[in-house]
Length: 132
Image 1 (tube, rainbow, N blue to C red):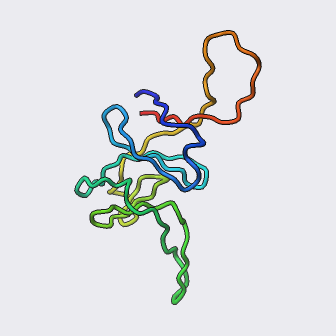
Image 2: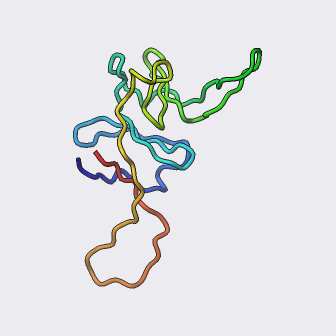
């Protein structure tokens, strides 16, 4: 399992995503309300590119006759057949105990400085690193 810089924090504003290939694996990196998540870009149903699907929310448990919408930006819907997955956990909305998509750890790390004599600086941004 290696660590791979996939971009700067500034490149991933809240609500954005990017698909890429890391160590030969297709993944999607999402910024959900300021927290970063990475999922395998393959739907377990038939291998569709899951991470290019619609990012949405869902209806939440509520009283009869009442419809409460929430979790906006936390659900990704497969572009082929509409299967929905929780971006924050990789679990299926329909069957969270048996159907899931692989997730990867994501950390924010300070940008590294070169190994040369430098003057004091402050770090104002970081990089996004995916651990596989």
